[in-house]
Image (cartoon, rainbow, N blue to C red; front, side):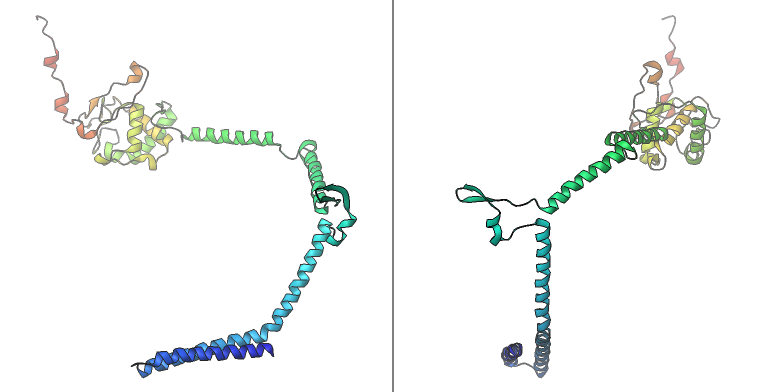
Length: 314
């Protein structure tokens, strides 16, 4: 009955409130359509409010039932907590109180909680199992063995990367002379390089790679860097995204193996004469040259033999 009266009171209050709002909305020079729209909105609002209150009235016993169930559940949890902690109620603390007294602070002789003993005995069981598994049966790896295994795996991966040439760059690359590597470099050359440099390296769109003149520097390090980075200004793409460092080393070594072959249809020399410092000083250095500043007129690069000869009379 109390819930019903509360519901009726709430409905009456909402009706009065909406009636006031509707009266204020209908004053003035508003059209009939607006008035009907607001009236319909007020009726919908009242219907929703009525359904909400009705639901609250019908479900009130359910809420009471839920509260009782929650109370029972809390009491059950309290019982479990009492078993796990083995605590003493406050009214019985005087039975376990010791004679120690320090400024009114007294000590209780509580027992060790069962959950703490369970953890302690569990650690003993785990230690026994660990000892048998790792030190008696040897079925598990101790930390030292795990570390050594991880080091071995890392070394194997490093050797594999070295074998595949993942660590090769223009600073540590070396010239390959093995026939198998040069053959692989030739295969890469035939697939990717012949359209611009010709099958024999004499040059078509690109320069002649068989003479001693180099636009971007000769030697394995410079050739490796040129192939890796490309020459976008001259239309040569960067091959480091398409070839592995090992493959670039192989094709660069093959390019240098074409030195002195003198193809029949080779282009005139371009760039400057490169002196391999490996043969003179034992140190191959990088030489970065701006191709826009390199003269490509072979006539200007040839020296007049008549000017080189000295007059023996003089």
